[in-house]
Length: 419
Image (cartoon, rainbow, N blue to C red; front, side):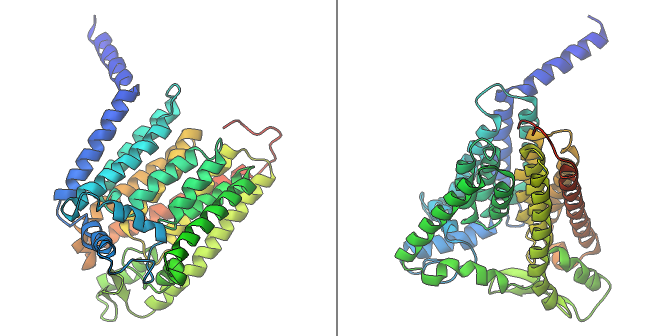
């Protein structure tokens, strides 16, 4: 065999290895083991919220002292307490390990849904490899926050949105009652699906049940306290709008500074206009969501297929939540996984650009947090620049999503394409 032939044969063997389920599952285990180890050992305290905040909340409830969201208002929806309490099952000493195990199990369920039971298609294989690469680029923050519980719910819900909209509605509703952001994906489902009434009915019934159980537990209005808690936040330093004030600090401004809020345990911008900017984020978010919703409705009315509408609609709504957000925490980057995976499953060539941009957002997020986060806290010019580029990438994602939605609604389709 010639040297060229040997190279071709080797390349063919590698392709066949990477194409199989066994290789994907081995890579899944490897990525999760490495990221779990990094969470437990890396500098920068990547599991800080889990071990220093979530565990305290869970222990307080276990001792009968304070139940977050029941006895007092809470920053999270009421179901967020379920995984926090579950992570205490093996005791406080193993809280971090148990938390990481819960995340891995939920991710494995979503990964199995992505691969499917039938023959593994090239599209799903590509989406699976992308997700693993995205997690590796994003680093420990992919597992170290409550968002890690909602991402696999969102991925599975979107994958089942076309064929099982009721199940998708259940998963997205549960996700929204853990962390609000999957509600945006539910909005996309209601717009794009022909069974929107069923989805709305399921979500309403499930939400009523969750609220009913909370009220029976004695929550009162505390069950909805997360709404007021979020509106009371200031402008966090990772928020896209905060970039303007960070550059003022870089320029030597004496009127702008970074302060730590002990009420909500975050670093925030203090300076002229920062409070007004924080207040502006809510109407900006509402306006952005409305604009994207109208584009989605336009595409639906013109007969665009589900596979053309749902992925860019879901992506656009998620990016609006990220850009018009007064918090902007690094874990928000995990939200991008669900709509990008859906897009790669439906239209991989079309979604190559947003997939690459989302991967770049993950990489920049990882560089900033957790290892060198201190440099951003002192407004180091290099790290402020990295954050600025990250915001620019998110803006590019939104432009791409809006353009895709506009194109989907440009002409009426006589026969919608199959999913």
